[in-house]
Each structure stands twice: as structure tokens, then as C-alpha cells.
Amino acid sequence: MAGQSLFHELVGLLPHQKSEGETVFPVVLSPNPKIPKAVHLPEAIKANRSWLDSLLHRSGAILFRGFPVSSASDFNDVVESSGYEDFSYGVGGAGTRTKVVDRVYTANEAPPDQNIPFHHEMSHVPVFPSKLFFFCEVEPGKGGETCIALSHVIYERMQQKHPKFVEEMEEKGLIYTRVLGEESDPSSPVGRSWKETFMTDDKTVAEERAAKMGMKLEWMEGGVRVIIGPNAGFRYDEVKKHKIWFNGVVGRFEDKLNDDPSKAVMFSDGKPVPIDVRDDCCKILDEECVALQWRKGDVLLLDNLAVLHSRRPLTMLPRRVLASFCK
Image (cartoon, rainbow, N blue to C red; front, side):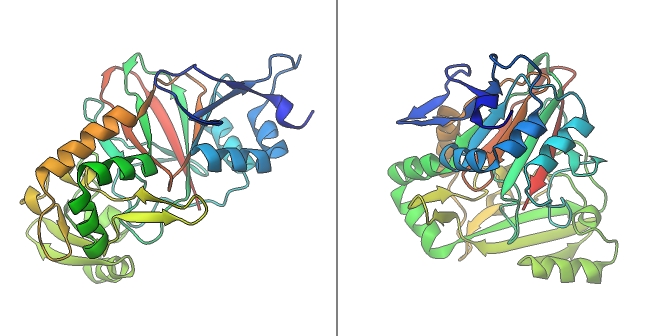
């Protein structure tokens, strides 16, 4: 059986789920209870690709809940069924991940007690995934929510709150500074070593790969300082005719290896981003986000251009969320 009748949309299931006209964020889809046999998610996605694409474009996020997806291999089948081309998480990524099977990786392996701040995946490099899949293999006991927020809403609220900053950001662009160690730091959400980040232990090769991504490397004792940018702090959605908040103003302050946190995010002229701007952005993100408390078998599909995501600290183990990236 094909068609949208394989799915049943749930509204009001998630706390703080957003609704604007006919658009819901996120959309929550479950198997149609009127269908007598089990609805397998890969088959349902294959039969409804165009409809799901339009739904994702309107909403920015789709949560598939209640389908029989129980393993990394099952999740890989779901990702493959989408028809989206694979984006290999390789050179340039900041978070520590382990490949599990085929197109599936662990989500950021930062310690569970740490917050992973809001971000767009790999927004600091020229080529980044357009879509993200997440899958809950082991449901957390408490905490560990994945929070999602619409980027154009964050842009609009930041423009209202800090119009001069937004104007300056658009005119100048932003520069990010990170310090990468010789070895990976498993205690940090952005703890990949320079060797792992650039997938080489040859400094010359690392410099060549960094240059292709708009990065400059300054070697120092015990590691390297990475200068990224200047990059635009926003992007414009030509179809929806609005600007989106596409930057690391929040996340880059979390780099604990940076010996001068005031230079973590700067304008292209070297002027630091004010701390009050960062703090207000954090507050707005918290106010506007939807916090997803994972259930085993959940699959979350995000438009990486439209939606920021984060992870709250986990207060009760275990939790295992897997990820996959698409071009």
C-alpha cells in the first residue's frame, strides 16, 4: 500500500510544538493505525519521497515515531530509502564521532553531563550537509533532549533585539578562532585533534586541506590555532524569501582550548562579538526551541539550513543516538 495514508500525523504530542497557519514544527508522523499490518519506515519513505520533501521544506523537521526501527542497520535502511546522497563526515568536522555502519555514525560523543550548544552542522566550512538524520537506539532515562529551533525565527528576534550587531555582522562577516590539540579531547563537544579534523598527521597536508575550506593554520606548541573565515553570519532562503541565522555565535564560545575566549568569534576587522549578544542569543534559542525527549526507535529528519539543533546534558544513562548526513 502506497501514498500518504501510510502515515498518521500527530499534533500536540510534543511540549512547545510550534504551529503557524498550516505549518507545524516539527511535523510528527506515526504509522497509520487503520492499516492492519506493520508499516515499515523505509518502504513508507520510498512511496512518499516527494510529499515528505515538500513537508520537510515547509516545516524544517520531521519526527518519525512508532515505526519498527531498532538497530543501526535498520536506521541505515531508513537513510538509504530517502534517496538523499551520502555526505561523509570527514575533513573539517568539529565533533568526535565513530562510524557504526555504512552511512551511520554516533552522534557527538561529548561527555553526557555537557551541553552541546545550538548549531547548524558544519556551518563553519564551505561545504556542509543539507539534511541530517538522527535515530534513538537507546532511550535516555532522563535528560539528553535534542532541542531544535527555526533559524529564520532566531534571525528575526536577534534583529529586533540587536539590530546594530546584525547589521554589522551582515556587512563584515565573522571570523572564528579554535585551538586544536595534538590528540583528541573526549571531554569536549568540539574536541577533535587537528590530525583527526584534517585526517592527516602531515602538517603540510593539513594546511592544504584547511586552505580549501577557507581556514588558516597557525602552529603552536601542542597543537594549532585555526582561523576560520570571514564567513557570512546568515544565509538567504530564495524560496521562502527570508534570512536565516547561520553562524557559530553561540557554539564557538564553548571551545575550552582557546587561550583567548574573547577572540573565539570576531568581526572580520578583529572586533570581538559582545558577550551580551551571545547571552541574549542563548536565551532566545531556549525560548524558541522544541525539546525532543527521545523514545526508542525515533527517527528525526532535519533541514540543516532551516533548523539549529543542540543537546541538553544527560542526567541518567544510558543514551545512544546515532546520526547520518546527506548532501
